[in-house]
Length: 401
Image (cartoon, rainbow, N blue to C red; front, side, top):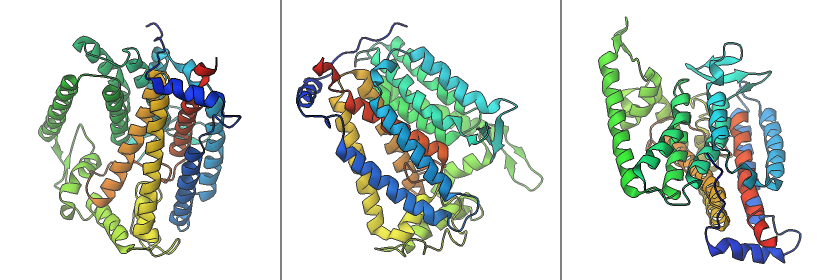
C-alpha cells in the first residue's frame, strides 16, 4: 500500500513550531515529561528493591541495569525523527508476526508457567512485550491512511482484520494478558483515528458474543480429571480462574482466590502512611505471590500506604496529561496516533493491574508500567517513552524549515 501523506492536524502544531523556532537550544526538551519519568522510575525502583530483597528469584541489580539501558535507548529515540517510520505498515505487520510466533521455534523457544512466551538467546526475552512497540506502529500506520475519518464499512473491516492479527498470534502461546493489551491498543487507534461509533458498537457486541460462545464451547468440550476437576480445551484452567475468581474470591482459597485475598490484605494493612520500605510482611513472608511483578502495587500500598498510592496515581495522571498534550501538538496523524495508542495502553495496564489487586477487575497478570519487575517490560516502556519524546521534539521541525 502506498505511504500515507503526512498532513497537519490542527493549527496547534504550527503554533508550536513557531514558538520553538525562537526558543533556543532547549526547545526540544520536555522538562515536565523528564521530571515525571525520573520520579516514577525512582519510585518503582524503591518498591522493587523492597519486593526483591527477600526473594532470590529476582535480581534488583538486573533491574537497575535494565533501567540504565532503557534510559539510553529513550535518549537515542528522542533524537530520531519518528516520521521516517510512517508508511511501513506491511513491515510492521511482518515484524509483529515474527516476534510473537518466535517462542514456538524449537531451538530458542522456552515454555514457562503453561505458556510459550519466552525465547532464550543468551538471555531470556519476552518477544510479545517487544511486539507492543510494533503493534502501536502498525495500528497507527493503518489508521493514518484514512486521514482521521473512517466511514466505509469494508475499509473498517480491513483495518480491524489487520489489527487483530497480532492478537490471534499471541493467543497461540497463549498469553491472554498481552493479547488484551493488543486489543486495547487497536481500540484506541480506531476511536482516535476516526472510526464511526456505529461500527465500534457493532464490533463490541460481536466481541461479547464471541467471548460467551468460547466460554460455552469450552464448557461443552471439557473433560473430567481423576480428582473430580475438569480440563478445559480452549482456555487454560488457570486463565478461566483468573478471569472469574474476582466475582467470588472466597470460592477459591487455594489459588487465584487466595492471591486476591492476600493482595487485598496487603493493601488494607498499609493504612495512611504505610509500614515503611522494607518493612512490609505480605511479600517478605511469601504470602503475596509474584510480588515484584503482578502484585507490585500491593507492596507499594502496604509499605507506603494511602499517601504512596496517591503519589503514584498523581504521577500517572501527570504522565497521561503530558502525553495527550504531546499528541495534540503533533503535526501529523501518524505521530498523534502513536502517542495516543501508547497512552491508551498505559491507561489500560494501570487500571487493570490496580483493579485486579482491589478485586474490581479479573486477574490477568498484566504488569504495572514503570513499577513491575521485568527486563523486557521495562525496556519496552523506555522505548515507548523515546517515541513520545521524538514526537514532541520533532513537532516543530516542519515549521522551522
